[in-house]
Image (cartoon, rainbow, N blue to C red; front, side):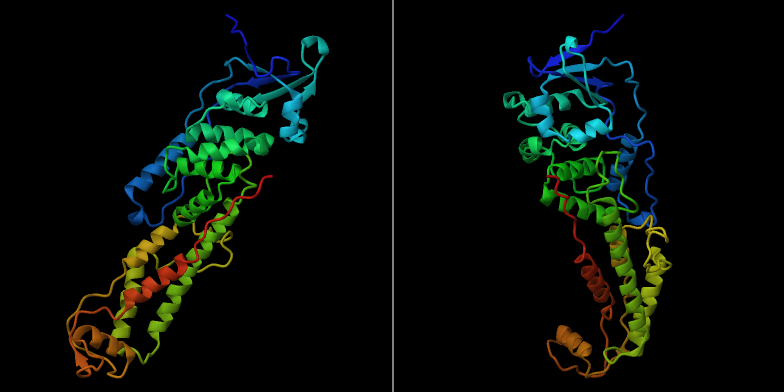
Length: 377
């Protein structure tokens, strides 16, 4: 039984036949997708693991057979189409050719795999048929539209509608890494939603543990994503490590502000804490690519691991210099006086190790910034 080819007349007087082969192919799949390793699994929450599992299953899902799907034909106008697109991309990929006049068309354009509804919506926009353009679309459909916009350079024509659709999305901006975040990031890059793009890339820098997953979305290699985000993540991790190493050196040296006992306990607690959390062998690196890009480590997990390092609680007397600023601060906090009563006192304290670690965390996280999308027109 022969399935009749459907014809959608965008312009009844159009001179161009647009042929869509294999319409509605599975979207945003990547057969080469590889999940990230997890170096600090104790700091990876179940909900974030579920997001990654969903991303992997959607990227690696078995492709359904669409080879037998009937082609979709659209009658469109070259006068409306060509000024709104990158004509050179069609010629380069042999998707545009002249046809014989007796076929009723002057030109033929071919495409493959696009979502039929997304392509139809864009053709309505390009032909000025705004009354046929939907008021709202969901994120999945918007991403399918954005893919076609990016492929053919329909950015100017679709920019207004893209911005409007983004503003009407019912789903909130994703707060953790996963498929929805990647689709939202791609949409934000195509339609230049700078605020969302910066927030989403910041989440990626914070949570990612390796190279960016791109899901084979077209043009993403040209958008400020993979290399820049990996570099930002590696710089932050290296900064954490360098600062912790500096703290170890600081605690290993004699200081006026704290006694030998306090320094020894702080250094010991730090060393044991790093080993217990799995950070003891992590080294600061200059050439991240040659040394594995800290694969498996995320900024988020390192922050949580460092926050778990604690001084042991103790009550015995420790000697401090009664003239040190540290003792005066402790005395003020415990007795309300800036003058310590003596060179020995008993209290439950942590010799400020936690405060020093938190200072490092805050300093490094303050450097974390999302990126902006590249202008496309």
